Length: 164
Image (cartoon, rainbow, N blue to C red; front, top):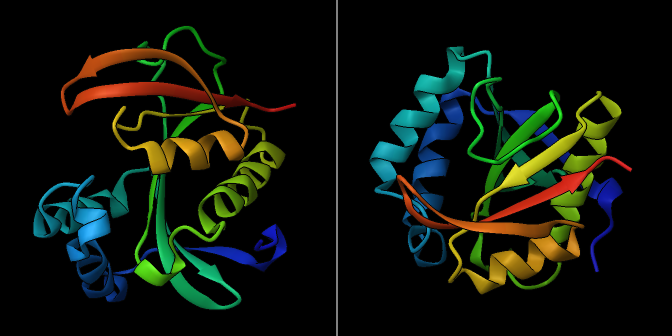
């Protein structure tokens, strides 16, 4: 099982966009994310958005995953009642050979520890209810389901983890 101290999160740069597009084209990612060129364009557009933060996740110095976090607006109650310092996250492992061996829960747990240390009180996410692999990873990382809803992207299982 990977250990959390081997993960680093560095901001995405324009130089990362071709790698992200390759990852988004991988079958295990494409199934759950949108059209790769459109997703990459959206990531690039978010470079200047102070509410968004996009990261390349490195394991032992090697890039292998993408993670984005976003502040939940004060008037956005799509995740229900929540503390003021709540962020949402989305992520994927880009390299297929890194899937299914414990990196998902461990990298998410490492990111949670980082943002909780920075004052975040709750992290939320909303996987598709059919994405059992991701849901298992989130549960292993300490998230619990609290609702299932229909969103603009389709059905979503609403999950949260609070700072201890």
